[in-house]
Length: 234
Image (cartoon, rainbow, N blue to C red; front, side, top):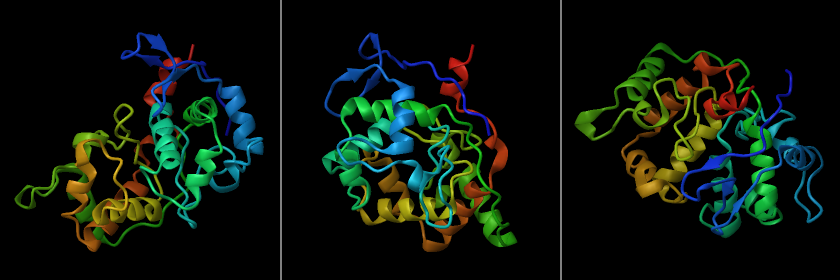
């Protein structure tokens, strides 16, 4: 897979400038080349190389449940790193890593991973009943139970929408399941307006497995760069 050149900035309408917003309220201009060094070698303050868990090109690790980062909008990745660092998103592995990165470094490494194509490894097919249930929840929801369709926030093909709703098409099932269960239990609380907690609270274990399996196998966007990255190409 070929690495892609990245424009160094992300426009911020809220600030009137160019950069990535951090939880500390600052806006920084991202340097994806510096982010590549952190991803490959780690940081001087002790953060390990991102590639050791997330892969050389942000492809993730489906067996271990480490998420794919490739193609995610940089502003979304920055928000997650900020949330890990300040405790809004508790995680014993990621919290010290994110805290070892400065706001500038979080923006840099996020811009680096945004530019990769969102290619995921092949996923075993689901049983027919689970596949049908996963598709129904993704496309239509379950309105008698007050469940909106996943596509209403994450896009018709799970491609993600802006900085708040990540790309989930092709994300590994183990990671999707773990996050839905974290939303459901309240262990994860960094969702805008509590949207994911409200949805996950109504999902059964079977629902979670079905929708996770559906999106893990949704290769519609495999091989396609994120919308934000595509806009940056000359």
